Amino acid sequence: MQKDMFIHHHQRNGFYTMHKYHFHEQYEIYYLINGERTYFIKDLTYRIREGDLVFIDKYELHKTGDTRLPNHERVLINFADGFLRHFNQPLLFEPFRMKIRLLTVPPQDRIWVQSLLFEMLKEANDALPGSETALQAQLASLLIWCARRLNRGSGTDFEHESPAHKKIADIVADINGSFSEPLSLESIAKQHFISPYHLSRMFKRVTGFSFVEYVNSIRINEAQRLLRETDWKVTLIAERVGYENIGHFGRVFKEIAKTNPLDYRKTAKRIGQ
Image (cartoon, rainbow, N blue to C red; front, top):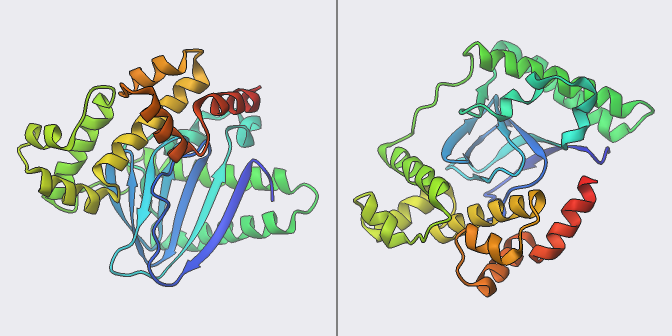
């Protein structure tokens, strides 16, 4: 298995919930072979069905959840920025930058997509000479095919499942644009003409996150970016992402990142060298 690229095949029997805080430095491709899932990405919640491909950008907050059909089978690919560096082809990354991150593979193309994914699984597991180059070529082939379909409008036209999903999408978009300001469940509920109790229940049901979990996650995600990309002091970063108390910021950061801000910065800079 190559360190810059991982591919996994899983069959899940029964209900399964992803870790509550989930964003990482690698790109992610999720293909559902059978079953049904929900997938929250950035500010939209998708219902994923058999033959759907999902694309998650690096450092992007996301979470998958159960539907009433708990059993499912999927293939998951994670790869680092440098894995496709030799191609120098921006088209490869377009699926991760689209507004809608869902591509429903037409039935006539599913045999090709699934065959390619299982060839990649075999290539990764066998780890024969030249396997990294073979995986790079296979992944590039898949991504170019996906980008072409998305660019010519063959992706799924997004429709919210319900007015509640549309309402929460609007609220999440507002939070994403104002997380550096003081935020509370009560203030957001008042702004959107909804009771705090109803907002709390609806937010959890649609996104998979509690309101506080989501706000903390999006703030710490931005704090990590600032730690990687600037030399700002931790106290300034805490303030910029909405924490008035540096002690509280440190506790939340460690809970989500499993390390403290200074150690995170040292590790990130070492990896980036």
